[in-house]
Image (cartoon, rainbow, N blue to C red; front, side, top):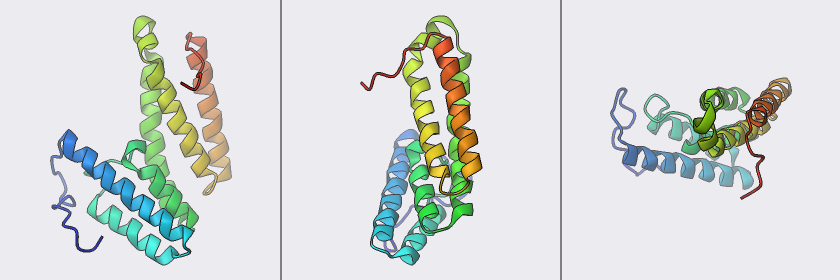
Length: 167
């Protein structure tokens, strides 16, 4: 963690292509996993250090907080060590990203909606996951988010969306 050269990813306005962005997502995810393992071992101070390092070397302004970037795992780790404000800050960004995609897919009509059903369900799954993590920070916000997920799922079904069958 301390010897790796991060390549100047903390420089604002840096262009990061798709391939490098996926590598950044992988590194953020791995750092979040490391923090979770440290928490499991009772080393909360080290876990917080790892999370702060992840935010410093893979800043949100260059590597956006999305579910796929490992941001939800970071938020979960922050919540587990009692840093609820940090967890909420990240969760709000991941929630907003997933909700904007869900809203977009749900406004599609006809064959475009039918082709995007898996995408809608993926975003609703992400939103459900974020609502679950939010329980550790704010119960009323978590309940509100669950209601939003259920309402969006009802819209999905009303438009003819097929129920999730687990495959």
